[in-house]
Amino acid sequence: MFTANLFSRKSPALDDINWRFEYKYQLTMPQYLAVKSAILPNMALDEYTKAVPDNRYFVRSLYFDSFFFDAFHDKADGNCDRLKLRIRTYVDSPDNIEILKAEIKVRKDVTTEKYVAQINYADYLSFMDDQHWPGDKLYNEVLTEFERYYHQKTLVPIVLVQYEREGYRARTKEEIRITFDHHVRSARADGLFPENPIFRVHTPGSIILEIKCNKMQPEWLRRLIRDYGLTIISNSKYVQGVIVSHPSVVTPSWSA
Image (cartoon, rainbow, N blue to C red):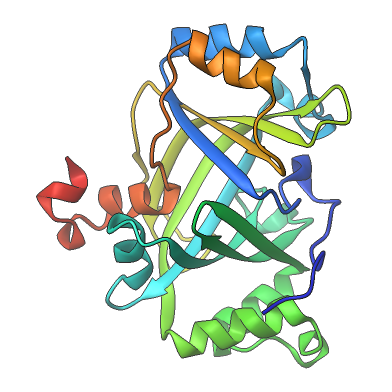
């Protein structure tokens, strides 16, 4: 579908690197403090996290789905092959936008691929107004595929997800990315910057640990996870966002 390395590597905290394996864990505050301390011999704050107050940078994503919530049901039902479209920003107001990204995230069995195109605010407004990218974006393969999937699957904006991210990079040449996501919350929205959105917290009091790597986890990391009794969870921020902001589409088994 895509050629390799179509995404930028200059956006915040290495989020655009196409990590193949993703592992997610839900931590209590004591677990978060212990795990953060334990990774420091091998991991260091990335340059973007160090540059912001409290060492946490803001992330907001607008997710798209069909009228029947097909992407939500694919994830909730555990389908191995899935695809999600989203537009991401790192600010909460259009007044100080420096970067926006259109992203296609593809899940294939146990691996994940992400394709990213940087856009500006005018590009975003154009797409949201008439569901087409401006003419000068037609030769960007990621945006072409984004628009094709958008129309093929009859997508609409569904939910806004935002959080504060704390990112770490490996001190060595190991291809590892570790993040802690704080205050994850969602709201119904039809755009990135709605007026007076009502945000609902996903899991109060918890922090989401994500480990991303291009190879299997190194031994030191596997040992750390084992020593702290961490268990991999299915923690799609989009699914959680639908659960808290669109309860009418959720069955009791999904929300249990």
